[in-house]
Image (cartoon, rainbow, N blue to C red; front, side):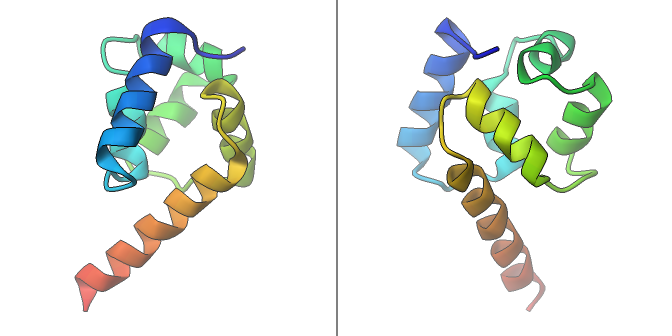
Length: 96
């Protein structure tokens, strides 16, 4: 199932405005603002806990999840994997 309407618009606006400056978790969280996590997890096709763990940075983005997000938000998988890699690089830069 793909997101439509408000969620899709929110994602597109955030994506364009921030130009990749939001972390993976922030982008998903802000795109899904005001959307019950249960509903969002149904749209994406994952258990509620899986989505919650990703948003709360308790788990890393898997390739499977990247596929599901790319379908739900009508993007390509490279978008999500690149965002994941940028987050990893930024974390390493913060440590140094």
